[in-house]
Amino acid sequence: MIGASFVPPCREGRHGSNASRADGSTGPMNILLTSHAFLPQLGGIEFVSATLAREFVAAGHQVRVITHTPADEEDALPYEVYRRPNARQTARLLQWCDVHLQSNISLRYLWPALLLRTPSLVTYHTWLQRPDGSVAWQDRVKRLATHGVTRNLAVSKAVAASLPGRVGVIRNPYDDQTFKPQPQRVTLGDLVFLGRLVDDKGVDLLIDALAVLAARGIRATLSIVGTGPEEAALRERTDRLGLTDAVAFLGKRSGPALARTLAAHRVLVVPSRWQEPFGVVVLEGLACGLRVVASDVGGLPEAVGGCGQLFRPGSAESLADILEQELQGSATPSTDALDPAVDAHLKPYRATAVAAEYLAHLSAIRKRRVPRDAGDELTMTFNDSITPRGEHLHSGSKRETSA
Image 1 (spheres, rainbow, N blue to C red):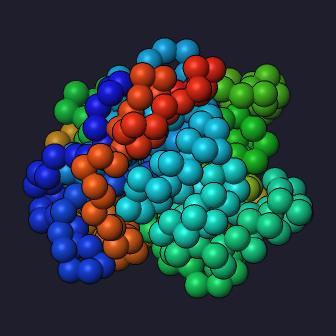
Image 2: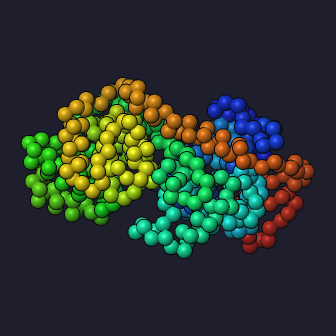
């Protein structure tokens, strides 16, 4: 949108009335969303950030995204994306916005916001520590930075409890347009695992639990959806335990094909060893009509709610006990509607509901904007730098951006 004005048209959003300003006036917000990881990468944070940006625009707000993730092609998105902007360009965007939302803390973009006193809301998607549990200097600096942020939110009570100061909880959305009961369901098996094949995810523990069930005379089938460095070892473990005919490695699947695959099973198993910060995969399974059995770690219990069961972390016997109960009592997933209790559990995690929750927080901290003179209206210049009209960049000025 080269040369297009940053001043958005005033329009009513589909989430209802426009958010109120702190000074009592109403109107759409200018929202700057910074997400170190973003599309076209695919992952949890990338999905949440892109979903929120899309929903904010649909609600009538003006959105700009800053990310460190490069892209080979131009973005076909309903908002503009600024990839690896320099400090001056970042500052201009922070001055443009009413409020700054950071999807997972990144000091690269948070420090300028704190220095410019831009109202900032930071969402913590994971723990501020290294994968081995140690706390590095970067984590200590991030913990210190939380005290300067206008509002801190975490994706689960478990993550919030691990952070210093006052931290609220905000829900993570799932893709409710993709993950839902499937009308044309083909039965593939009893149990299904979805995730990367790495030690932290506990797939080996699930295979061991399957062997425990077999020793009890219960022959259950398992589909493993995903790829990763542990696949060869898991296949060898399956063969060694005599479960080759009971376990199917389906590889990577996504979108509607993944939803159909999940719906073709009775129980989703999440056997993580790692303290999962939340667990959107749980919501995806529930939305497709499955029961869920998950490890009692991190934020997984919050994702499961009363729609499944938890087992003792690291115990194949405990997992086998729970799976035996589920296999004997779980019904075939519905092909047209969710159980009312499951539907009620999922409702606040749907994209529009989560976006509305975010917008309420953003509205509460948005800054009072001072009207500018017409000649100072912020615009996009030909080389994609944000400047007041009449201010010219040097001919060599350039940034990596896609809009």
